Length: 138
Image (cartoon, rainbow, N blue to C red):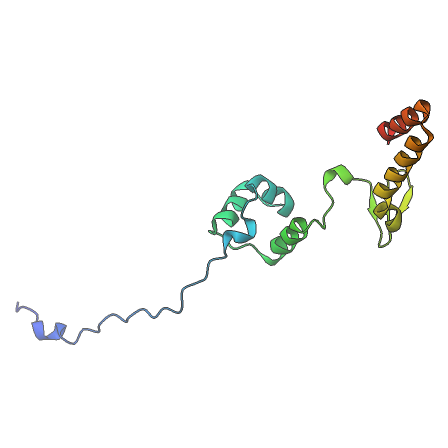
């Protein structure tokens, strides 16, 4: 048996160079910066491990997760404490069905100051005490 001709190896095809495109841009974790992973997981309805991946930038959040997070971050989502309340364009309705319009909510602090001033003007201790009792009950 004769040895194979070493010149046959000279024409061996060289491996192709891997052409790579521009590097993938990882999502910046600045979107979730400063928020705990537990909060991200609850707001976006994802697992805690996924929330950690979003925070570190290992995983890119989907469009629905981004939309949920932006709504939550901009305080356009009601938390569990507000369960039963209904938000209308011009009013808020509590679970008992009482409707409070936007103007009344805006002027609530001003009204409380006015009532306090009225109670002080009378000088009657009972009126002032009644004012504080009303505030405690509210």
